[in-house]
Length: 227
Length: 321
Image (cartoon, rainbow over all chains, first blue to last red; front, side):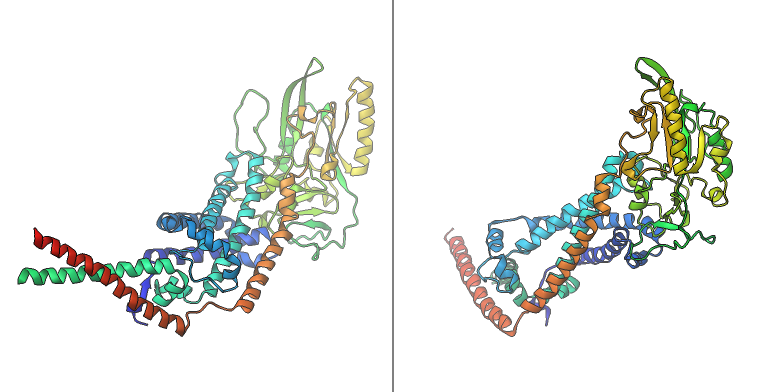
């Protein structure tokens, strides 16, 4: 497909940031799971020895947090809920069954993606705060023992929640064909955009038409002036 | 660990399906009995502990009480605690040797995520296996007595071993050996309880109506026990917990929460596989591409028609001026 029929969905910087989050999140999640389920010790091997897991896990998690905060700044304005989201949510059963009603305008992200976005942002914040409290090497000594115990528990709660959501997120990308390609190359086909994100498609196409208009006008102005 | 004991009854972060070597588990439970009523606070036990275990705690400073070092530390596994309290209108100076209690149900071992970093021997001793320790500090959260300390030098947890190496060869712990007043006793747990009972009768006869044994059952009993003159108020003795127990939140985190989250993972994976097979992928079909092309063609026309009109009107207006 040539680029003419494609729309830029994710700019290079965001894509780059996303791929770093993917890699670091996998390492952090697996090493964290090896601490939560000691029986699946193999998950910890991604970072080497169990001692290295303890040492590196919090740093990697911290980097994921920082990268996600960058994502928050870049993407928050696309994720503000609106009235169409309510309609979308009302049809959630049909949407999950793959029979999405065509008449619901969907912006850059649909209601499900928006919910996921805000869940990810809040859970990573919980993980960062509780993670700092329980970080024995540097911070744990400054917190009372009751707070420490709560932090450890809520860290595991938020972590399990986030990992499950991310599994769902990855599945959705796998389910809706063309999404993964879009996240890697940045471009999606116009047909994909119209099918899955109709309102975003219209907005993007109008931008293109407006560009064309301007170019035409500029051309005709030049012609008029020369006459 | 090269010297094997083969009498390990609990091993951290391992499954009950795969028990530790325990062929020689036939052993009597041992206990250390600390009779605080005959302790004079000389700190010989602290010195003996440092000497036997070859520890050199950092030299601390005086803070107005005799406590020194001020707290337990990776290199100070036992510390004398001095409390000046008033009981029934009488001033009392209570001295307690603080250190690991060697619980029957150890919160540290329950919390530990490192395989074999904390083990419990058949004789009741709870021992840290430092080479397996990862330094996460979960044992600190699990302990009801605030005992484990993590070293900033090597990120390993340390605490009293009950001189497991001495006991293994039939000797008493170093602190017991050295105590000049005989306030620290060592033997089978049964014998220690019997001896404590005699002491308590004696103390009661001498006016300490609330004398008693500190062997808290909420942690399954301990293998370090105290004879207290005020057993009804353990907290008088520098905050010895009145009701020591593994925190409920730690129990849930290490208990029900694990199978619940494992089930959540299984349900999620099963659900997704089912969904993909039942619903199938959402793909952009040939049809979608054609429809988009057609739609786009009309949309472009409509857009330009609408805007061309406005542009021509603007030009028109300009002419009039």
